[in-house]
Length: 175
Image: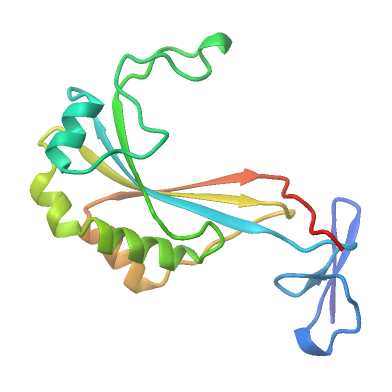
């Protein structure tokens, strides 16, 4: 058993999850108080354009956009804090699987729902593609691993890859 010190919290990692005597198990092999660790994902295709509106992009791509999309020139959500209007249109297409599903499942869902070959055929000339992975977590740190076969899907989209991590608080399970 290995001990770790993190921000004043003492953690230990067990070699065998099933033989551990502590009840308060933190996923990944660590113990921390009486709660379980949470990690959820939101995975989306982002199509960016400096000239097209959201409606024009939805029309050309043959699908409605997901929540969080915006048109160039629209006020930013943080406008009251001095943020300028959006400098480009971002058309978002979200994975349809559960937030608790592995990243691999999200990427596979996007591949099925909007195949890379179809997207590239419909993609307007001035647009760029990004696969956006958002990780929501409530632990000291977080990581994600993508197998080569999922990276190949990203490559078939000719997409950039963006991973953003959001420290979060999740509702505690009722005992």
